[in-house]
Length: 454
Image (cartoon, rainbow, N blue to C red):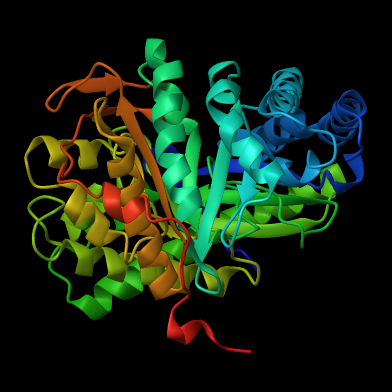
């Protein structure tokens, strides 16, 4: 039962503390759309998605208005397109045609992103997988609302270093092909290890093959709410601190559960998961870095940052699972640099480096996210960064990711403006000592010894 005190608390979170439902994402299986004819496959994809999502945006707006809960984004995730297009796509350009179809759908139904221009290559690449990966620069340069993700490793399979090496080149090529927009294409491409198949958050979202034909996932975010709660207990010990974060996460998740169940009922689509993530925005007061500083750090990046982030991530998850039986996706704390004003301030103050961010990814939700680097960074260096982050995920049995943007024409000390939720970012230095011999070896890094469980 919800009592009047909880109602008042929730209203305050929404009005004063930046609580929002970050996204309602409909996941859709396209397996039944695949044919050996490209035009027919595109037609099937168009008909299925538009048929299911015709009322998605309006439903989100109706729920938002009726319940007084801001719902920021309405999105779609689909079956990895490398699977859907495997029979009909003979060249990388064929995959671009599917990508354009998806972009057209996104514009027509009014969503801001559609995820699933993806391939799962953690153990090896089929010809179809490789063609999709090679199509990414063109696909992201000629579309507006497509997000792409490639899973290159897992704890069970190891790391596919052939894919990692290729993606170093693909990220550089994508940056070049979108350099007129500050290499924005790279902001819509993420390389994952241990990707979950129930993730509604872009750019890594796709609809897993183990999912139902269509599902509703909801992503909830509330860093401003957690920050406010901690401001009320400035001198509390760790026990009180943890309990406060946990209780706040519980309340945030309950809001998401309400929205998810209502959207599921109105759209006639089964409820999937709640993704409770402290995902920041460029808005002042909506920052994960600010939470870490409220815990007791002068700046994010100071000694103690990794421990504070581990504490935060764990308590968020504990509070979430008490509020809903279906918490999933990438629940926890995100640390995207460009989308978090506190992170940007820490970088500009010299407190936060890529090396410290990498250490923080051992305990956060995902990984190195929305980091701008010099445009002349070598493809092999980018591949080495991806390999490092994948190794953290593989060894620690967690999801890790790299969304890195070599901004063509920009150098360390300059900044880049991406706009909207993607924010702006200072260009960060990278370690330029050469790793090309390592990444060019080819083959696969084997799975760790503790992966052999069955």
